[in-house]
Length: 387
Ligand code: NDP
Image (tube, rainbow, N blue to C red; front, top):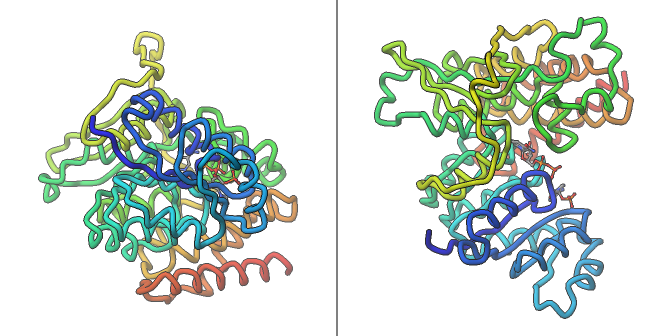
């Protein structure tokens, strides 16, 4: 593999740290030149990672932490930067590939910028597709880089999606573990708190995505992501609950064949695939032992207990900026749930209420359209929460 220049957005997060681990496994400095690592509040960790992995630049998105970062990097020769301009600079560097793993809407601007430079985008951030949709996919196309999904489900679909068979494409089937509340009654779900909701049975992830997995809002976002990523009609996106998280997703074709990608639940496989694409490189991750696995289970998702899935379908059918509205409203409800100001099931009620109020926004033509829809959805969600 030739040395590739890479910027890691969100390096201090769960995906970022796994990315650095994969880079080390793929040959470290011989295989990758790290042009930049970015973080937000966790400046000490950011500086440590930058030094450990020989990054040329470290950026904290939080301008008030710039002095701390600069001090932590003094004498290392690593450039320190902060704020939107720092992220913009990291995105504008000559990168062959960018790992887009900033959480939330904050990831949108730097990833769009990186796409415009023609770098390949290894995409973990959800908002780029859910909120910006075609604005983002068009930016990648115009830039000329590849868009390679990192989310395990989309990576799975990407790995078995036969573009030259598109006319014979029937559907994609996204698998869902069902999260920690898969078997809980509606009444019990009314009373769960954030500490219980964050305990995912199979995957180790950041706080927000863990809770989104429990409510299946994460799966809802993945449905919308899949729609944009693979240019699908809403009816072509299905979800099936598969508690073992061994099949990471599937693609069904018109002849009845279904192709699936399987593996141990470990994000490093999807990250490694994105970083080495189009090659497959050895990774030290758990190998599946089918004799030990013995069985794989499947069940239909229950949209009464997990209304997020129904809301995703609604957003896909309505189109325009409904993805941004769903996501913005959900984020406010999620924050409120984490802080104990909103019940678990109320998150979907708030989101649905805001989606109904803002159901006719056309597709974004600029990033500002996305920000406006996002902040209006957040404002309205906060209003509904106060009622
Ligand atoms: P984490 O919360 O673990 O990490 C988020 C990263 O974003 C950190 O580096 C954090 O910096 C940085 N960050 C936080 N706020 C801002 C901001 N305002 N501006 C710039 N940077 C910021 O998240 P994950 O790694 O779990 O997830 C990253 C993205 O990937 C999310 O969009 C998630 O939905 C998606 N994803 C994650 C998966 C997983 O398995 N974890 C699977 C598939 C997708 P700091 O640490 O300094 O706060």
